[in-house]
Image (tube, rainbow over all chains, first blue to last red; front, side, top):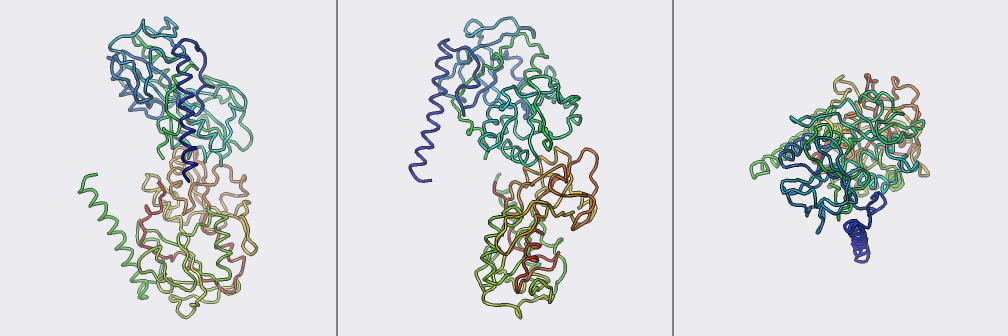
Length: 274
Length: 274
């Protein structure tokens, strides 16, 4: 690379981050309360789970035992709403477009500001999402069937149990993308670079081998066509920790509203390990 | 790593290289003329092809166009029998246990010393072999069916044509190893680190998709069992360039005798790109 291309590349990342910060500003002000999928292209978006301190330590242990579905990209200090690991000025109380509040596992409120709910023992977990690795797959020249169809990726409960802690347990949920074998090999290489956003697939081929009875009937999202010569490829999915927390019914839990995630200052490439 | 483990690791590589050099000394002296598979464990072994200068340049172009089956790990200067890329004192005329000499595509001699055949235009190509990536697969905790069976890996001609040059052409030959999907994913990751020894697989699953009519009837080597839940995984194979050269019938070509390869000074890990 000569100096001009280095400078152009740096400029590109700056533009991405400026776009992310502008979007987050709109969200913080309350001007934007919708879905984030089209915002901050190339930028890491995060799933959010806020838990009381006496549940947070155990959830961190659960994450450590189940890194493929549940690697946090940031964990806050107790009571501190800021997330310096993800950007200079990210306040979890205002910077997500919309939140859902659960008490004892039941939804009790939907809000766009957490100031009224904040407590000095709350711990924020931000979990990476498949947007980051899907961006890398598309950059690698692969096509995603659910992108082409304009639908939500199909997700399935499996017979692969997560490694439980006393209060957190449940099945691993996977997302599925069909590829030709050659593209599947490329997809395995590409996603292996992103261990914090589910990394390499955990299975390909026969759905029954991981307890999926009907590939055309996903538990979440929409079914996609699997064409002749293609194989379904299965990745651990961020719905896993959501389902595990729902099942654990902590006295208080706050999440992002599905589809309305936290936009960070990190370019997706920042998550690549090589 | 603390200093003691660094030193132990350095010592380990030293021991490997010393073992390789001792084996090569026996070979150079003529004391050993057999197979090399059990010699120099953890050390890169190479397939050898020596070609006249007016064929060598074109063969190098063929290799560049077909990197998965044919990436040389060393190419000599014309007429120079030494291979400094592979070790301090490697003389291709004496350091392979046994050679085969072909003229116009026909075998004309088998020898243990090339001094009588050497010419000042000859160029040596050393091509990596699957021993290096198989070593990495086993180090990664995977089991190889043909190792367990004590047989030669099954190899197949495919319908994937190599990218031809005027005199070199022919089908890609693949080797096959069966794995469970989870192990296949690990095998794809592991072999992706070794692009100079065939790298990632080029196919898995349906053999017919790459023109293999009967998986139980390999064109070279021995068939292996594919168990329930396993998929065949196919890598580009070093037999490809051998078959391509045979077909091209150069006036002179010298190869190692099958199974009796060049032992280098490089640990297998030296071929890993990350």
